[in-house]
Amino acid sequence: KQRQSIKNVSGDGARWIDACIKKYIPHATRCVDGFHVVTWAMEALDSVRKDIWRDAQNSYKEAKNTTSSTRGRPSKEEQTERKKLDEAKEKVSSIKNAKYALGKAPENLTENQKAKLDFISNTHVKLFRAYKLKELLRLVFKQHSREAAEKIIDSFFWKATHSRIQIFKELGHKIKRHKTNILNTIEQGLSNARVESINNKIKLSIRKAYGFRNYENMVDMIMLVCSKLSIPLPNRGVLGMKVM
Image 1 (cartoon, rainbow, N blue to C red):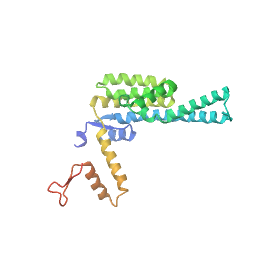
Image 2 (image 1 turned 90 degrees about the vertical axis):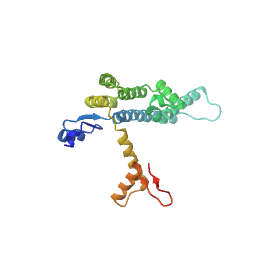
Image 3 (image 1 turned 60 degrees about the vertical axis):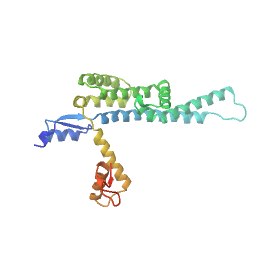
Image 4 (image 1 turned 120 degrees about the vertical axis):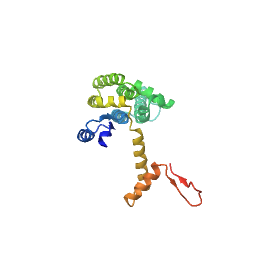
């Protein structure tokens, strides 16, 4: 009777979740949480950034090894070599420090992060293409209708599979496999945000405690951190200490 009352199931794209739904609650609607979908795109984008950073780092090292250094005033050829070396170093630094600028939503960027993003758009076409694909997928979860979200997913699939970026090609096919479940999420308006927030609080509490002597102590700490229990303490009045 309790299982029959479950109408929707929201989670990541793990196959074991599908197997459990099929076995125990086949009548429930399967949804894939938007946080996890955007995380897939973020991981793909960061993988592209790291690959480009490694290539730029290797190019910088090669240029540094081949650049001659002489005393006195450098010749025109040496000045040109040093200029190219400075440009290569700037590219390495811009890619390495662009992780947060690429990951944040455009409306939340600082002026410095916007400048980094503009620099990448002019110097690293492949990385900026991957960034736009990430933003296109994020746009899916801002839609309020199944039809509007489906159009964006179809557009993402076409652009990702024609992007000449292997990891985004794979992501495009992954999104296509989960398309129905993603659209169910839009239609049902579900989100795992609150659950993920509580999970992070629990993990943080465990790290701060450096472990517990027994299971009961851990549960007590979780209840203190994640609930609104009022703890009666001496000399604190009737209300005691309220833990939020």
